[in-house]
Image (tube, rainbow over all chains, first blue to last red; front, side, top):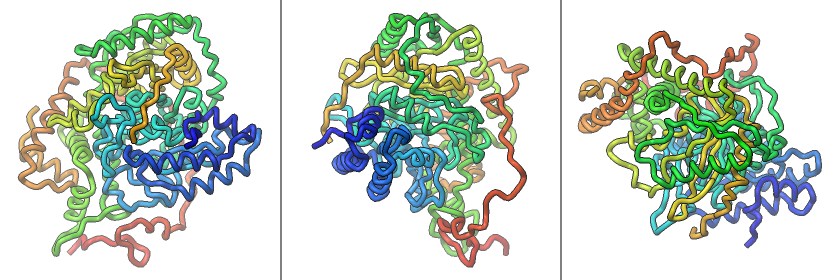
Length: 492
Length: 95
């Protein structure tokens, strides 16, 4: 058994450049790990032929001039359209769909020489916080603290499980309300959601267009910097893509945060927050202070209203985006009865193709956009969103460089445990992350410790818009101080 | 706000999702819970606040108004559940 799949992206890159390792060897090691890890249900469409072909091409391209991602095997979240490869957004309604095109982000990774091992499990249409709404079934967290199967978080649960279990060196994720950062925290890995507009959304199945952003999920902060840089950049095919130069993020990792001002928002101290999360947060503050940062108390007064605003805006945009799944152009179409017309075709197709959570959100979105409620719900939520963004602008204008918060309100929970009659309970998982999407800011989750039972816990740093380099550097300082090196014990 | 069964039925119809009658009461209860959670927004003073249209202060990217792509009907129809003679086929729409 080789340990090659345990390598970081940076270590693999350096070894391949020196000629000590080939991408074919590395890719084969990952493919064999994936084969042995079906119990995790992380990879749901394997693409070994594509992987071996890309690995061979990467080895031919190898050299000092090859891009950083050259030859690096990664997993791609099922939300990304990949040419000729099933791309279902973990939904029954996209059963059999094989895109005729490549998403900009996955295309950029492949242009940079990255190797695709396969597609990764997720919550259906990225709607969920536990990977329990997937048509492929639950993805399982490689971490355990007793004999229960734990959630890897969601919606990028397969990506998180795959990286944490060393099935791949990195994975793509997407984050609409916390879907990169929460699963990263639940599995002891690093995940960054960049500023809205950094990564093209073209070819990424849309959930809530004003909130969706792609980002990398990796084994450490340096890898996040390397992979993010390969994913970013202006794209004329996405009208919200930012026409800004992409900096060298890895070069920003000096670890020197002396004089940086780190804000601690008092509104994130939630009632009933577990003592372990409180302690982790306090430890994080002490680490950053030790590293020379100035830690200051700040206020983000509208924090409490972020989740309710999100649960208007995201379903509203989803109801509009998901209207395209009508059984006409792609995916599933219901079998019709004699006399059924086009309306019955739509209604039966969508009832069969969408899972319960997706149906619920599409209908909530339909309701808040319907005549008579548009102003009361949708417009009010958009006004509250303006206020939430202003909260952040005020603290950044006051000189704060980054904001430190817990990433999640708990460690990973058992699969099935949070499924209750009240969907709002599940929504509370995103309480610390969702503000960042509403304000369009970059946010990163870094593993910083464990709970009493040994499960990983993460801290979140939130940065100024377009300052991912600075944010990654603060995260790097935190990572070095926290010294989190624990790995799940292999049981799969 | 409490959602009744008729409203739930109407919303399902608007969303073009078939919901059987016996599933409507549970759906109405779920809607009521979610909307109850959303009602918190009424506590916020939004007087004079502009609703957000774009999270980054940039104008949407525009391109030249020219044909940039096209002429690939095979690719467009490739994933259709029912495509015939170069068209998407659907059940009869008008009598």
